[in-house]
Length: 442
Image (cartoon, rainbow, N blue to C red; front, top):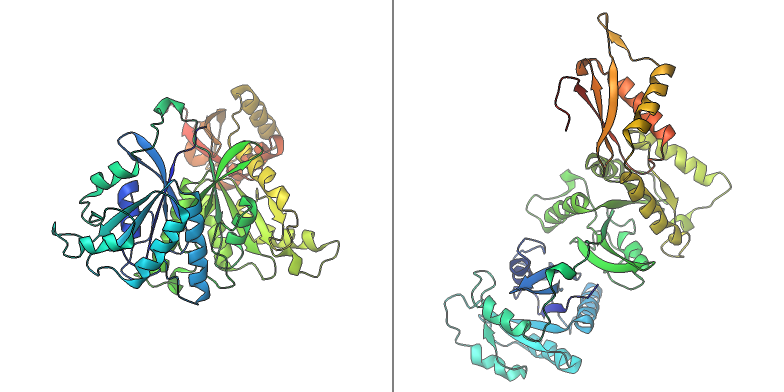
């Protein structure tokens, strides 16, 4: 697969980088709020201009003189983005004029020897009294834009893509499998992402809520490309202010679950399973996504030969609504059993993608009915004519019956268990839908 060129957006805090990013990718991906340092990690999405396709990277605001530990992380992440970029959009604030922070960033960009497009943002009235002052940065001709209003973006993008090769649409392969890493704050999601990627891709700090965006990272495993989505920690709703940045982070995490093909649900083995852990697992289950439950920080426990069994028994009770769950016990700190994660992820996705022949399904159904006949209600017995599979991801089965109102939840659960006993559907929910025999079959 031919890799797309990479374009990184860099600059001081609050110059409009995320607003430009969202405008160019065509949807609200980066969190935009009128306060500095909202974007901490690199946020990556595909973008396109005049049939030129490229990967766009949003970065945290650069305050190079700050000694704050979080700002050091942001600078590190931004420098990584600069290293991998083919072209850099250097954003400055046309209303504020040239500041010392701009000179500091410009110095880094000159040393990178990468092509730089100097974008003077917030030029909303077609004039900028300070535009020519930006020549002093020594990075070529300043281009006046308004990321908020969309002005000047076409001219800027013409310069960005001028040396790119066009990638024919028919040369693109199927989109890689997307894997979301979800959990409450500070359970080790970003550390797990970094371990799987083999690099310090995410900001990792010993502080809850460090990751605030859902971030896509392309990586290769056994010769195949995959996308990891690291998400913000999902906290209880009543612990989040509705207008806060964290509120939007949680919304973004829920969206990540929806668009992912598989979810890795991360728990902290050194703490009790919380109500929020269960709710997050429930969100994955309700979206019909296959999943792997990863107990992280396994190295912190004093263990004996029955520790894993006790934890599994506790999860059986806490996650009884998703009895199909697949547990793993790992440590991102020591690397213990991390190699088991991707095989488990691929296995549960394979299970979610299974399609069974109607003859196989009806043999399973006949065996189940023979063992435990369908119930009756008010003298009328449920009759199941046959069963077919309607779709995959999750596996969805249609039961054609004489009267769908007679299918009690307990018997539906029994049929699901019989299906699972006959076929390996571990790690994925399955759906059973009763349809009256006279209904049209899809």
